[in-house]
Length: 461
Ligand SMILES: *[C@@H]1O[C@H](CO)[C@@H](O)[C@H](O)[C@H]1NC(C)=O
Ligand SMILES: *[C@@H]1O[C@H](CO)[C@@H](O)[C@H](O)[C@H]1NC(C)=O
Ligand SMILES: *[C@@H]1O[C@H](CO)[C@@H](O)[C@H](O)[C@H]1NC(C)=O
Image (tube, rainbow, N blue to C red; front, side):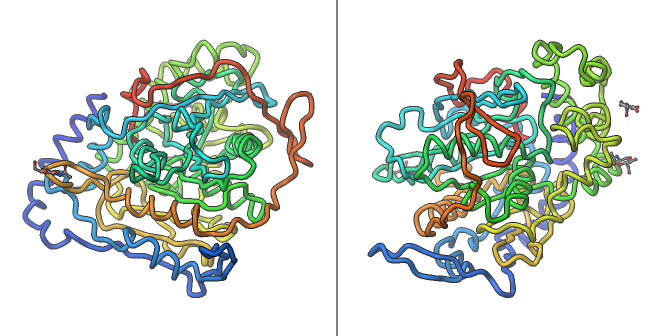
């Protein structure tokens, strides 16, 4: 863990000491929730098997009471920095333990994605059980504590208090041990890889509803995917937690504050380390534009996030024709998600925290879209939301609303008939009709321990 984050920890304790006395005022606030003035009507399955129509707002209000429940930060994580840092520095190795079964898929451009399915032995789960498709944060993966906090209970059997669902974490290129086999990584804006992963998942579980769940950078990718696909989405719902939304505005504010620069540096350091760990894979393409930029990246000591993006993400963060971008600013403008919400056509819930130190602007009007529900807690930091549990334990407030949303969209909503492009097999690849893409499974998967990945010290942000 970087020295920077430790100094940040110390700093936020000192700064927070004053606030400690004012906490009583804002503790225990219920989140603000925005529904469209004319929320959508959606189709639901009745217990007798018939289909009925119901307002999305009514459904959320009755089936997701956790969303209205008060969030009271545990007293010693009394500001957004401490909530955020606890997610990064806390020891969650013994909590929400989970094993995955990894399946590797090869894409047409030669790249590889690591799909981690939970539970690892899913022989007892029905073929049509809903599948939560998880997109992780900046340099994360299936091992992240915030991912396991949702998937462990969601994938537990119903008789053990779980939802009995499947989960699959789409590990981005180079993340959580997924090998880099093409001159490309990933970014907050590039949706091609999740599109491919969803083609694969929908082919091996054609009868299962697929429910999207994105964290931070993954939430941004999820939002953009849903907006781009509209009615053709392979996900029947989306849930975005700690979405960064307006990338330029986050950069401005991170750059213009002393504390912001510490976060920015920590994120850049994680990314530089990701490049470093994937050097073997990345250096197999000496003729590619990417090769010219790797030496610079490796020398970027103490760089800020936008400097990394300027030097690398704008080139390696996605596929042509969008990439490479001339400047990181162009990439931020293209890759933001706050301005595409109006295009989403499936039920969508976003939850953010007002004191998130990384996210500056939250489009609380939901893009004026009848399908979007926007929730904002007063506190919670970036993917924190830690509150006091029974017997001195710490638990995540976010668990209840997210599980209830999954249960609503997985078990209650009727699956619309799919308008997604037809998939056929060509040269061994699953290919979507009319689109230049394809994917197939390759050797090299197997059992993955959810918390044993060597890169786990890179977790959190
Ligand atoms: C990030 O913000 C800083 C400070 O305002 C600015 O100088 C820089 O150009 C921005 N970077 C990008 C990529 O927009
Ligand atoms: C790379 O990052 C450094 C800062 O560490 C910056 O000075 C330089 O302009 C960046 N290179 C490019 C091409 O933007
Ligand atoms: C809390 O502690 C009590 C007494 O040790 C125990 O009976 C109870 O089960 C615990 N509750 C939880 C949720 O762990």
